[in-house]
Image (cartoon, rainbow, N blue to C red; front, side, top):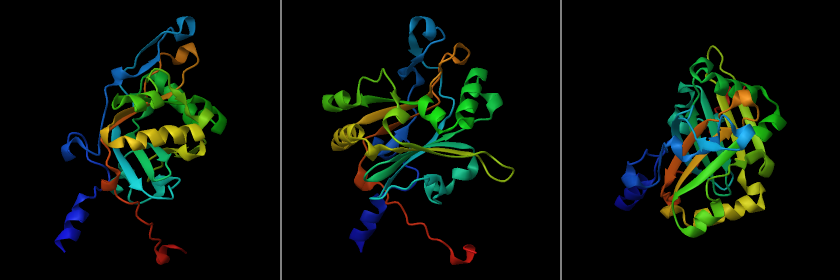
Length: 258
């Protein structure tokens, strides 16, 4: 019995611990916004990039759910973010991996609390169609700590990836109502791209020794929308996948079915 109890307690729950908890292993943190280079106010004239101002959306937490069949629209799952998803308006990035759902959650402040140019860029993104969003959402991953082979695979962290150009994205956006908070989920189907699968295999092979930072940026291509500012950032540390929880099955209550 003791053996069972010990293994049980090693499995982490949702969300993962925040650094430096759990001995700095299998945890997340908020990286410095200054790591991320974005288009400056004068970018259209001189192509100069500059360190970003602070992220507009604060990270609420990160989940890694082990599963052979990654869930789409993970926000519908009652277990996510420890069941607290509906406490505030939330932007969600859900990476569908061959072995897991890797999910980050971010608080979305009211539009009037965002810098006006960022509020405009975000509103256009939320109200845009699939093609518009696919053209605008960028991800900038940076290997903060890890072997050369991973840095080579992921890249130097200077040029963001235009996600929708390389990977199928799905958007599950529901605006806030009187009774429900807003949820803006982007699903990234990593396994659909051979190149992305190749990078993922290198990362997974060294994942226990890595610190990886991510930023999400909505591209600004008009002068009025510059400078760019990172929308959301998060960082993960020394992930031990064997400590991550399995994705619980959703139990459908028969009484609710009708």
